[in-house]
Image (tube, rainbow, N blue to C red; front, top):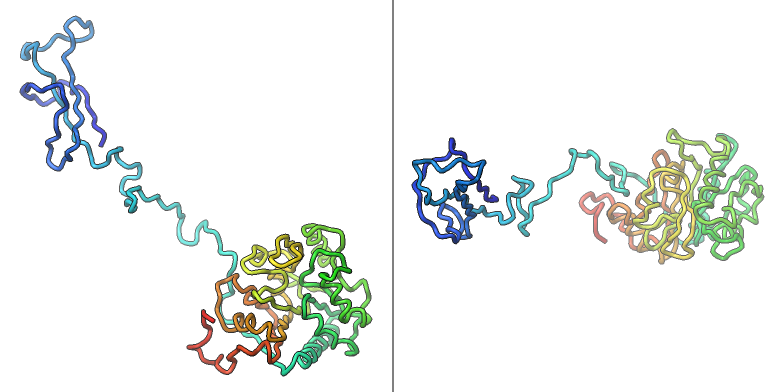
Length: 378
């Protein structure tokens, strides 16, 4: 404690015999006191000629020594800690007080959370990429026939990359293409004739070969930055009639079928591992300005928009996809580390379309073993 010294009032002071002391500081002698110097305060008697002081009492000599009030120093060299009662950290500093308002009160929610409980998905494995493309075309045509019979329209959402090459099997499929609406799950912010354009790749693979009305092929607007392109694209989707694109109770779009590819890092659409866009919980379309793979500027559907679809197909063909497929389907990763694991349609179906190459590392015959799956290491 800091030493507190002062002249004790006569009515409370305990009489003590005078004792001569040198002017040097006295040593602390109280039990438990440290060997540090005690605080000493001397109070000389008031001079007789001071008008505001009374002369010394007759019981005391005019040469009597001053009273001494000794308080030994505490073990805190800088005084009592401001937070008395808090424990001290290893460094000797007082541990900070918690500012928590209680369990689950005023806390930051983790941006990547999986839904509670297990989720079932289908896996279709074909002997070759060609047979997988035929199987994919059959599933798309069946979804088209069902949607058109129900409400007179079919919405198909496409990815870029190698997936669109498998769509050539749709040519000559006999679908009612005049009732189709084609949307992109993600797109690079480039001109339509750029080799990087997902629209350009789909047009070359099959859109130019089937009679879908141009007004029903909803490509990204050219000449805009990523932020403006995202706002523009979401506005155009919102402008579609509910008979073409119904909404669920949360206001999210109910696409009939979404076709996703998967990257070697487990990304889908332009939702990359641990990126803020991947953890978005609202909105239909977002801008991406720092894609880890070129080109950096893109737009993408949000994960909630993808998971609101009636049916989602993840298409992964060839041995180059084997590692990513095995990690997503068999390894329980940290939330956000493998965006493909976050694809879980709330009221729809999820199916993986594989060939023998991409399914090479899977142990599907062991999936029923609850002790082996799910696991958290490759």
